[in-house]
Length: 246
Image 1: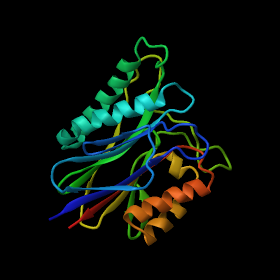
Image 2: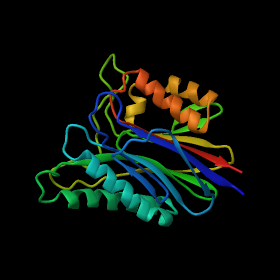
Image 3: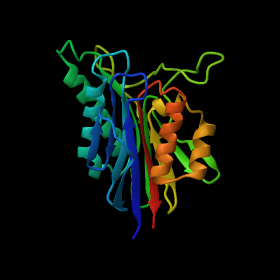
Image 4: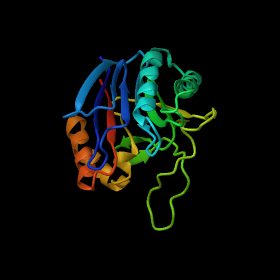
C-alpha cells in the first residue's frame, strides 16, 4: 500500500537559549521543544497530510507563541486541505489568528512567524510558504528549492539574509499575506525536505544535497542537523524529510 514516511526533528542550536520553531506532521505538532533524536511517522497515502515548519521571528516577542499557533491551526485544518485554494485560505486564517492573539496584549504585539510546508495528496503535492523557511525537492538529479523566499537579495559577499518581506503576523497592525502555493505531480520514491533557516543559513545547498544523496530517513535528518551544529548552530534547527513509499 502506498504510504508517506515523515522523519522530523527540532533543536534549539548552539546559540539561542530557547526554541521558537514549531512543526506539524498530520495531527502531530511539536511546539517550542527539542527532540533528542529524529522521529519517523508513517501515514497511508490518500487523505491530505500537512507537513510544515514555522519559525518564530527573532528579535520580536513571543515567536514561539506565533509559530505554535500556526502549526496547531494547520493540524486542525489539515484534512480539508485538498487544493491550492484551501491552502491559501488556511494560511490567511493562520495570519488572522496570529494578529487576533496579539491584539491588545503588549507582550505579544508584533509577534510573527514564517511557515513553509507541503500537503501530500493521493497524486500530487501542494508546496506552500510565507517567509523564508524552505521546501526542497530532493530528486536524484540534485536538490532544488521549490518554495519561494520572501526576502530581499543578500548583501554583496553574503550568501543569506535574515530580512523577510512577508510573514504571518509580525506588524503592529494587520497586514494581509499573499502565500506562495504550487501543485506538483507525485510519484513513489519522491523525497522532499521542509526546513527552517537554522539549517539553510549555515549549510549551503551543496552540503545539504551531498547528505541527501548518501542518506535517507532518520540518518539523513541526523546528518543534516549535525552539519548545522558543526557550522556553529547559530539558530533553531527544525526539519522534516518527506518520502513517498509503495
